[in-house]
Amino acid sequence: MRQFLTKLTLALFCVHIGAFAQDSEDETENFIFYDELTATISSLQKMTEGKTYKDADGKMFNLAFPETDFQIFTHDSLCDKATIKSAAKDVIEINEGIDFSKAVGLMVGDEFKDVVGVRVYFPAGYLKTVVVTDGVQTATKSPDYLEFYCLYGKVDENKKFYFDKMFERVWILIANKKIDKGYITEAQAREQYTAFSKGDDRAFRLNFPGSVLALQAQTNMERKNKDATALQKNIDYVNALADKYRFKRGLSEDGFRTYNPESAFLWHKKEYDRNGNITYANTKTFGNPYPLGPNAVTINQSSGEITVYGVIPFSGKEEQVPQQIQAFIADFKANVDAKYIKDKGYDTYEIEVPNANAKIMFNTVEYNKWRACFITFY
Image 1 (cartoon, rainbow, N blue to C red):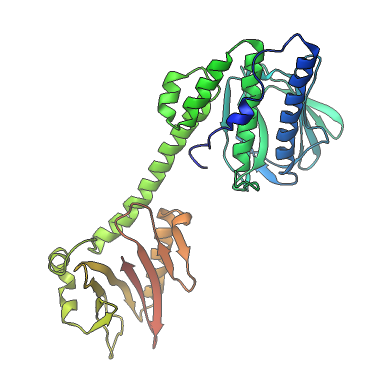
Image 2 (spheres, rainbow, N blue to C red):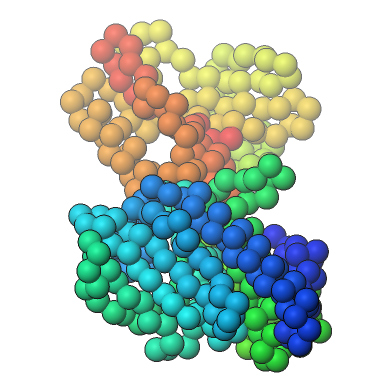
């Protein structure tokens, strides 16, 4: 999930201002505004028709919507919402008479299979959801929030994410309803909008703790901390591998030999010059062609720095070598998130973790019944 939502559309936010007017013509304009707003929210929801979603409780269901899934009524300005959740049976959940001025929080939930829910939280006990199974009312429950479903990771013709659009429209609905009821003023709504759009979540939480947007700001902070913790785990693993096999970026030839004395013999091996990059490689023509230990080192002639270092940790004809290689692959797959690993096929992988001390290429080779794996740092 992206950590910061894009800026709300000010033009949309400014369409409706202030409480309901007494004049019937103005009142008609108010409801035209709300009808268009709820219609847009409904159309965004229906783009998820037939997709599978998993809610916050881990329950999975297929999404479907009746023809009128979300609407506002002119006589009381309240909303109705209905969602068909079809699993073993057709189940429809219905909420009637929703007053969005009572909303206490707004946030984007977790993505599941390209679908995400924009959640509107209400005071405990306010929502009453009627559950109808195969046409018969089977239950009533009182959830903490309503969820509006939309596509995740997809953009419209203006390159705007659909979940950003959903978040914006629901926020505009809530803000205007609160203005209509006199709970906040237009100036306060604008102030909240401006502060939230700056992306300083901590400052927003401190300055606007009662805003419905404060929940999203808090969620942003928690996700950012969670992501940072997860990233650090990946960084630590890659850095530990670089330390174990004695690779460090930015070292000169002398500095690298001092840092990794085991590699010093490579400078006495055959060298290859490719566009100003000198590589020394420990190649063998007899016996094991893949001797254990340092295998190759590359120096950039322009900078004088070591840019690439290769080592062979497992090699031989023994039966345990393939097992050692597969164990090593399993280990880094267990410790590095899949999004940082690129499977190149044939037991060849690239590992690139942001802010780590090295990028890694892992590959295996086999020749004349000899088998080995190479770890290349760069």
